[in-house]
Image 1 (cartoon, rainbow, N blue to C red):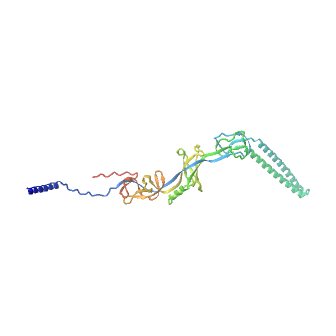
Image 2 (cartoon, rainbow, N blue to C red):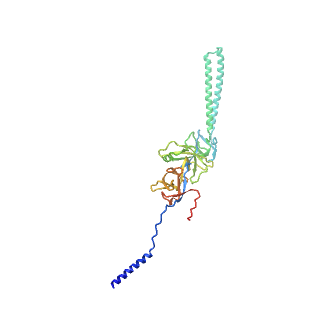
Length: 390
């Protein structure tokens, strides 16, 4: 009985093993892995181009000419002949002083001149008479020489008298105070009846020429050195003279009249580390007033062979270095460490690390990594349709 059970159990095991082997599926072969597909990217091919670099600097407006009007003679103001805030012309009368004393002095000087003229005429006649008498030896040579000397003395006195008349005329003219320049006149500091003195400290009024205007700005010397160093080796030209200047007003609007740079200081202020620049800006409508805070956009450098890269093509690594992905000769993405000096609009100005003809990847960067094959398409070109699987 035990032997029979043993044989039956063994037969059952054989039967189960046969059934399990018939239901097991064959193992599938491993899939063969192919080369990674090229990732479509957008590139910009770098081409050198001329670029003008500008810099926005803070500044203040100043009148081109300022004249503080002061009296040159003393007297009482009789009349004011201008309206405060008006435009005045050079030579226009501003104040009249009481001039009776100066007219009297002029009359006295003229009388002295007439007397000197008579003395000259008398001395001339005496000298002529003495010359005739000395020829016939009616008088001595000494008497003749004295007559000639008296004539010269009288002529000298006449010259002094004429100078006194001229001086009196000048002083009388100073009683009419005129504008020395064209410009806008400010408020009067005196009224009729006020006593003024020659060359006094207080100005009677101030005249400012407001068209054109000066815009005085400052630039850091270290910033200028940094820019020159960044552009070293480039074909640059310093537009120090007559560089275009655009004025930005306090409210952020651009002033419609374009100016030009006329002066660059040759010395650096040791207290601020900056140097001064001056621009001349037309101001026909008197929009700019002296003392206004403005910002001047000055185009102070030009490059003949500049390389510009769209800002989306430049990234920063963890250390802060600027990098760019370019398409290599083998069609793969390659990382370049570059140096950028400044932005020009929506592009970076590259000073090192890239060359003309390089294809910089500007779109699709998030889908690639260094060494990956890419399918470049020039920015602005039509993107080819993807191939349809058959």
